[in-house]
Amino acid sequence: MALKLNVGVSRKVGQPDYGSIGASCNLELELDLGLLDRDLDAFHARVRGAYVAAHQAVNDELARLQGPAQPTRETPAPAPRPSSNGHAGGNGHAGSNGHSDRPASGRPRPRRPATEKQVRAIVTIAGRQHADLDGLLRHYDVDRPEDLSIRQASELIDALNAAARA
Image 1 (tube, rainbow, N blue to C red):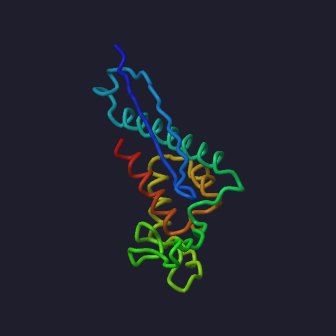
Image 2: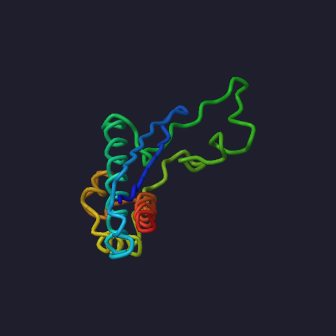
Image 3: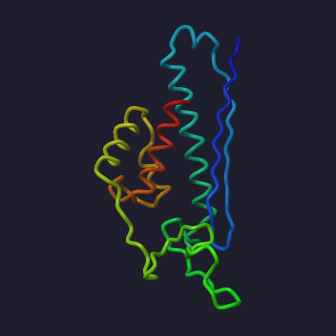
C-alpha cells in the first residue's frame, strides 16, 4: 500500500506601487507505507527533500519573474509622493503603513550584512538537511552565506527550519 505525501510552498513578494508577484509549488509523492514503520529517518529525509525542492522551485520562479530590471526587497522604496494638499501624510510616518525603507533624512539605509551567528546557522542547518546550499544562495544572487543581508539570512534560516519540521 502507498502513502501519499503532499508538500506545498507558496510565497508572495511585494513590488513597488502596491503590486506583488507570487509563486507556488505543490508536490504529491507516493511513498511506501512501510517506510513509517521501518525507517522513520528515511521518511523524514524524503519529506525534507521534497520541501527543499519545492522551496527552490518557488525561489527560482520568483527570481525569474523579478528579472534583473525589477527591484528586489533590498532596493530602497521611492520617496513618498506628497498629497494634493501639500502634506506628506496623516499618520506621522513616511510610509503609508508606518514603515519606510528610508530614514527621516531621506538617505537609503545601509544594507546590514548577515551576522556570523546567522551564517553558522545557515551552514549547519543546510548541511544537516543535505540541502543544496549553492542553489538556495543563487536565489539571492550571492555565492556565499556571508554575502547575504541580515534580512535575507533570516528568511533563509526560516525556510530551512520549516523544511526540517516538514
